[in-house]
Length: 426
Ligand SMILES: *[C@@H]1O[C@H](CO)[C@@H](O)[C@H](O)[C@H]1NC(C)=O
Ligand SMILES: *[C@@H]1O[C@H](CO)[C@@H](O)[C@H](O)[C@H]1NC(C)=O
Ligand SMILES: *[C@@H]1O[C@H](CO)[C@@H](O)[C@H](O)[C@H]1NC(C)=O
Ligand SMILES: *[C@@H]1O[C@H](CO)[C@@H](O)[C@H](O)[C@H]1NC(C)=O
Ligand SMILES: *[C@@H]1O[C@H](CO)[C@@H](O)[C@H](O)[C@H]1NC(C)=O
Ligand SMILES: *[C@@H]1O[C@H](CO)[C@@H](O)[C@H](O)[C@H]1NC(C)=O
Image (tube, rainbow, N blue to C red; front, side, top):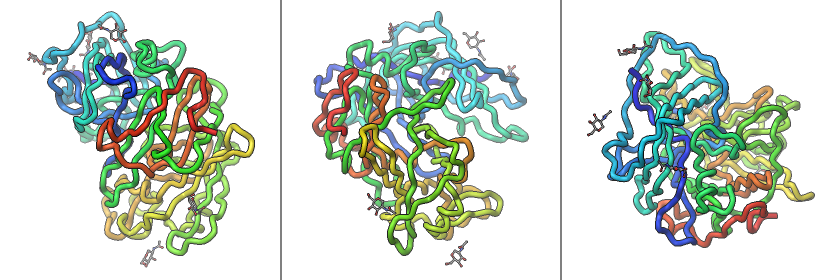
């Protein structure tokens, strides 16, 4: 029996006795190896139980979709991360609301027959626990995966997802941000997130902070904080879309003037900003990008873009620059993403890959019909998602420090009121 897969699709009341100057905050990491994405390591219950790596997903909302599925031959019991009955802070189990969730084009279907409220806390205990959060508890999940002989261990699947896409009028499933707002813990559904400076060692974990209903001071970004119009596709969509940016790059070994890289598919008008995706998957010409930068295509047992050398040997200053048009005429913002941010070990395990000679990148070009900025992009972007104004506000991030210090490392904070532009933005 598949049992107790925890689905953190949301949480609610931030009832910690914190100073009003301290917004609800979540510490996030972006690790090296496997298929890393941005995650929050959350431990549920009091005392804190086993830490659940939780995907921090701006591309899912927690809303139910319609889906069709069939159950395949592989049948596994998953690790139990949260046994609510032994927590001192849990609420009554709610079995009246049942939830179903679907991710990745119905590649994962999660059934959660019950929900409960409890505290969750972080591995870094300088960050306070968030109290009374609502979570859907799953006991049954169907994952679509090619797996002859049922060899893939269950532990490689997502255990928990924190859906952060815009709040929908009709939500099925607990919504973290909607609950913060309804509980008066934030004044708007806006939230800010940014990464600290790129760590020196290429295999270190990146540290990131998300705060809800507030924006930190300019010390967390450089240049202007520019408002972009959200530009969703027609029809049904979930997540944050902005107009396709321009890409400029230069030779990694002999840097010169930035050169424009053309689109591989000019019909792609918008890009999804999705921190729950482990790659940047972009409709820019691969041939042009490789020609300009000197990156290579590895094409043996697997094909992927790579740096011809160890990941350590990528110059820290080498970047891909994405320039987005602002909502205000004449304003634009460039997010320079270090090539090192794409070196997250995604292809290290592929037989034949010698990591002393080749560094696989979590970057896919020549995409057709699609554009997604995932976790690598977010390492360099300071982003504020402002639903009420239908804006995404961006600046160059990856310049700050302090995530490891807890709330004291946040610096001054300004609340974002509903329907207002983000403080300090242009
Ligand atoms: C999965 O395995 C459990 C325990 O062996 C069994 O009770 C259950 O019927 C199986 N489910 C499916 C769909 O095969
Ligand atoms: C759990 O939290 C939600 C959202 O704040 C709230 O509506 C609900 O009443 C709480 N449930 C329990 C059992 O406390
Ligand atoms: C949860 O804890 C209770 C109380 O200790 C125990 O009886 C139960 O077996 C535990 N459930 C699981 C799935 O570990
Ligand atoms: C999950 O829990 C529901 C409600 O308790 C139950 O009806 C269902 O059979 C359970 N499913 C599995 C696979 O254990
Ligand atoms: C990318 O942007 C950075 C920071 O704005 C700048 O220093 C660098 O010269 C730019 N590189 C290219 C290739 O445009
Ligand atoms: C990678 O670098 C090595 C050593 O400098 C060189 O011999 C080889 O041709 C390069 N590979 C590609 C695909 O450029």
